[in-house]
Image (cartoon, rainbow, N blue to C red; front, side):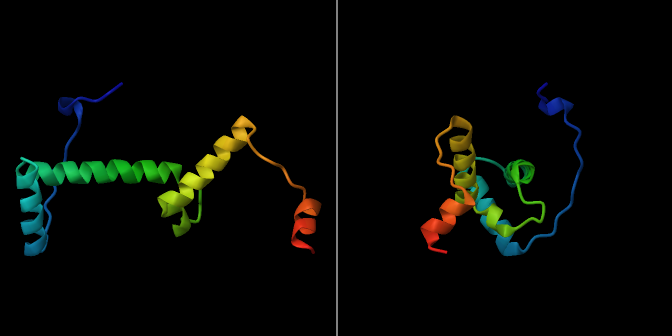
Length: 102
């Protein structure tokens, strides 16, 4: 079920930001054709959704920063897909030791 704007519970939040930050955000909002409030609300909503998605997909229970690099996660996801489609080569410990000469 998708939520409409009228069905979403909202909370008013007061923020204190440096003047330079407000000036830059105001300029970005103007360039985007929005008022500052709408621009910041949209920016925060997008950031929160992206972080929530990232948190749900974060495979490291320790929160290791390696997993925060998109390229690293993409490599792991590609490997999982290769495994699921059978596009892989399986090596035993003995095979790996032989290739390393140990």
